Image (tube, rainbow, N blue to C red; front, side, top):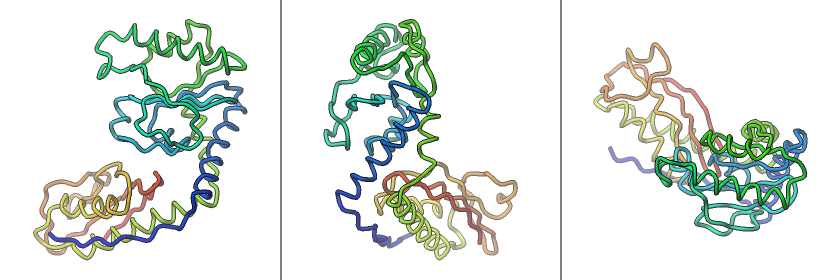
Length: 267
């Protein structure tokens, strides 16, 4: 299977326009924090850090091994821990991370969590206006440690989801670009739906188009054919597509700049 993938033209966004978008998103997050009177958000999710500072390093790795984390105070400097790059928008300081996962710290996390909590405590002494900290899903030992220091802990993911509800114009352009890439990928898939191809071979075309166009990843492998189209929600298999088969899919595609196109199609 030899598929020629073209590049879908991206919107022409100047450095200033991209900076304005990042400023807008950070402003939305801080507005969400202010509404809940939160002094500090500690972000661990690669999706959340993408929204806050356009973080794009080892995203799938970060999703299950939290090597990096970000301090976002309601007022004061953003501090990034663990990043390789040193030019993320609106980040004032880069520090080494205090690892809080078994992958990096071993099975006894007590000492690592204490060091992590002490750093949070030091940061809050300088920039916190109350004892309220929002933190994303992380080892419960970190949450317990911060609570033992007298902090009120809430879920930062809720703040992020509230912030992301309203998009600026540039974000809409980025979403349109991801949709255009996804539609092109589906067009190639339909044109190459041939007898003898496996479901996974057909599904791989969408991955190729996404990666070639600076996309990120796809959330699942939701494609089925023939008798596997019912019940729905089945992922692609090694089944060989036959003449006359129906093909059904859902894209769940994370494209350039982290924006998603969730489109269902069948043919």
